[in-house]
Length: 170
View (spheres, rainbow, N blue to C red):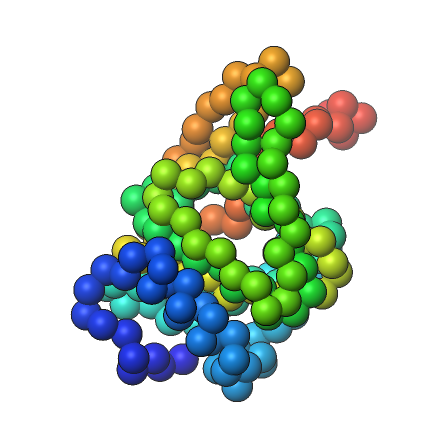
């Protein structure tokens, strides 16, 4: 994908939201990348330069990023098909969750911690980050409210760290 409208600088979260909203209206740039899997979230890099990083992600209800942040990057997510659930952690209380449907988008700064899951089995979203992703933080929140952060590469697939361990697999 080439995207000639991007400035030669880091974009703020509102500019990233405008970018994903614009790309949502241009399926010829990403539609051929759409694919679904319950075993792993399907994702494809659409564009990357020194200032911005754009991804297409496909979701089923079984796909879950786990809790994570985007290190020093701001970001935006535009849902182009189906729906996603975005959850924000609330220590000592119920987590805040909202369903984001096709045609909707949201943006966030680098301080944002969230978890994304497929709310439908056919969700497609476009994500943009600036500066481009290099590292992310993954979080585990224990039942007693303890939180820990693990730094991971942007190339690693995000998965929940807090899934119960299957003791029969040992």
